Length: 167
Length: 271
Image 1: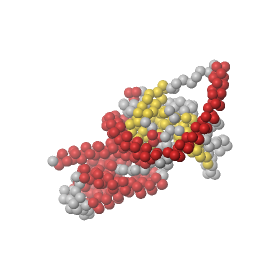
Image 2: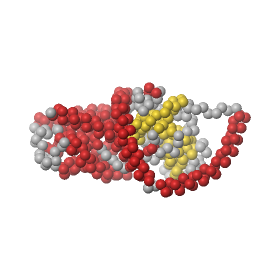
Image 3: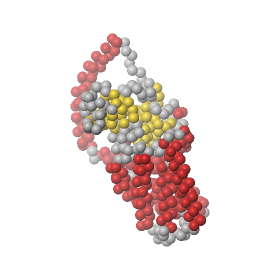
Image 4: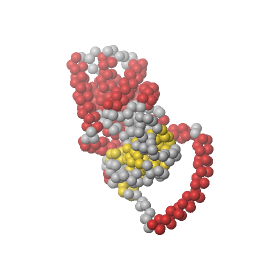
């Protein structure tokens, strides 16, 4: 049953991966900026465990970069680190409730934006501070909205209980 | 709480992932063939799925586009009326010029410019990040498309093919900060480089301060591109500025092509 669950999560991940590559990019033209993969990885890590989260994050990031990025390797690194950070938060006693999810999504979105900008800057790309500021402001809001679609789909609990399975 | 064993296992896994990612980032930045091969294979594998989802969601995106455009309709009508009046003025002048041009060509026995050999393609993916502006097309190596070829539509130049898989390819758009193509100002024939930027504005760089450039000047491709034919329309000069630190003019270009609404394009195979 657990394996079936993980396979189901995997297919959801693939679906949102394609949606990210095709659909989210077009929405960006209207300043609507969703990061489907990040929210799916966060949900999968909360539902399963850090190891699954890191592997799925690495895999999804790798495919995402191969499909739509100049530099391959940044997204797998970021998403795997996100899953690892969630693990650390859970270790320190984070409970599975809506507020925790919102804070996690907010925090990880902001961290990702900053890390990605630093990595690209190190690889001689120009950083546009206005666009980065806009990202820092808008992206978390849209990602938080995604919680209400993706978390129920992946069947993450909203009950407030501590997770026993996680480690 | 996590057991120390599990905690150690997770630290080992994340360390391995960090090392692999850093190796892949370096290889990707150096454009190693292995990464390029992986990219083309992934494009081929995901192409059918990507095309289907793109087609399925496209009406939704168009609806958002239409709603957005609706609010600017009255302004657009005024602009078009002004443009129509100007075009009517130019029309009679152009007919005279065409007749004159044809007779001069006959006199000089110059052949008309050849038509380019092209392949038509449909956009199946759009990717606009801060770092890149790319589209994915449904043609690839099997249709004769290779890296470096120019992509155009009826309005002008769009971009360059940067990655060609079997049945799809990636095109870097003119507003990508990594693009750089030779270009001329049509009136003065001044030669420069058209380059994108992180703000998605397009600039014509390396035009000397001594050169005379006016707002509204037309910018075309130069004759020095291996795969890009000369005299394809790129855009018009929108803004010109000088600064003491820069020995060249800063010239912003407004492209003729609206990158947000590209649907069908032509890839130039031969010229």
